[in-house]
Length: 78
Image (cartoon, rainbow, N blue to C red; front, side, top):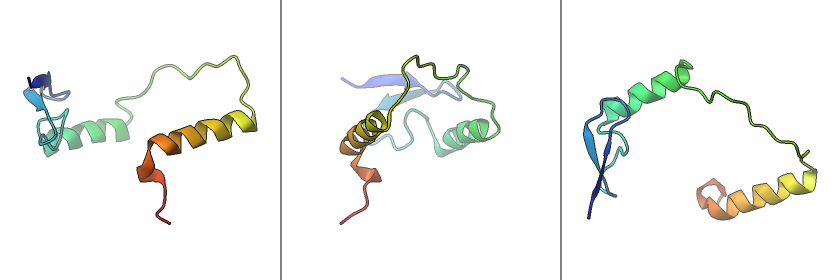
């Protein structure tokens, strides 16, 4: 079963599958329009991150290690 989602820019239906190169966008054009909106600050996260717990160096190191373990494309080849 293939899921269809609306393009965030033009609302055209997009099949959510690996061969849909620009998903969730329908095309490179819609993808670039959205990128431009972020660059012009038309899109932004409206609330600051709120944390009542101060982050120690150890906590930051643990978060970074976990992130790198789950996102191998950020790690430089050996």
